[in-house]
Amino acid sequence: MTGKPSISEGVVRAEFGAGGYLNINKPEGWASTDVVRKLKGITQSKKIGHGGTLDPLATGVLPICVDAATRFADTVLLGTKSYRITMKLGSSTNTYDSTGETMAESDWSGVTQEKVVESLEQFTGKFDQVPPMFSALHHNGQRLYELARRGIEVERPARPVEVLNLELVEFVAPDLVLDVECGHGFYARTLAHDIGEKLGTHAHLTALVRTHAGAFRLEDSVTIEQVSEAAELGDWRTVAMPIDTTLQHIAKTTLTAEFVEMVKHGRQLAVGDIGKPGEYQSGDRIRAYTPEDELLAILIFEPEKLGWRPEKVLAVI
Image 1: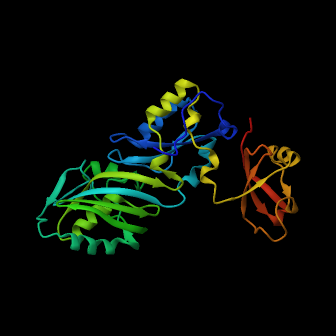
Image 2: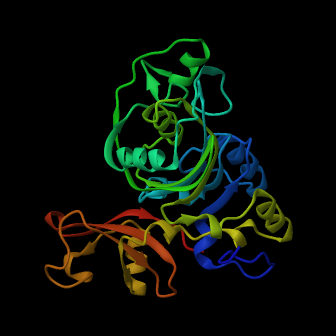
């Protein structure tokens, strides 16, 4: 795949010293937590976590935050996500996908491509979506899937979601293939279920590939095996992405050596030390780099406190 960092025994770039992101192409059958456990062993990292759960059935982009990158896990979820969805008409399941038990069956022979395209218009834009029972959401302190496994179904309030783009890729009845770009909190399994109802039949999801999530794209992803190979060759970080991958929406500045020492010790910079008068507003953030172009910190502008306060500071090797 193009754009993928090469695996070599070369010098690791300085910005990786404090950690980084692994853009993993998750294999089918693995839970997101399985991937984290496996990579924790490979990287020997004390802090590691994923940014955005994928069901075991799903494959594709699963961002993994390692070491200092875990401090920026909230930025992994920024932006939209894209999926390739495969679904089958004619039956619904309790999980809304092919891993569940069949709950109902119905005739799908009257469904045409024209009807499918027309139905998709109902699921484009902003609308409310009811999460599936088999999900990690909480209800009175319990995960919904824990209740569902005991045969308990509870009312789930609909949540606002946004679909920016939804296209029919292929229709070979009873199978549909869709491409969707969506915002946070969207459930592809629910979409498949709801499309079936809109078409006057039933449906469930049979395959799901996440093709992009924020700054992470499938064409730039690596496999668990590639990370393991990189670790055996010397350093897993040769296939990682730097921490500032998810921070490109924040302005950048390069500090002087004097300011670097101040920020390292948690001291704030004066209002006029960065930018021009009136250029920044209270609460604005900026990426601060050393003269060697290593990410040092995220600074937050607090003019009422007469300066730029170090909000997150990274250790520089």
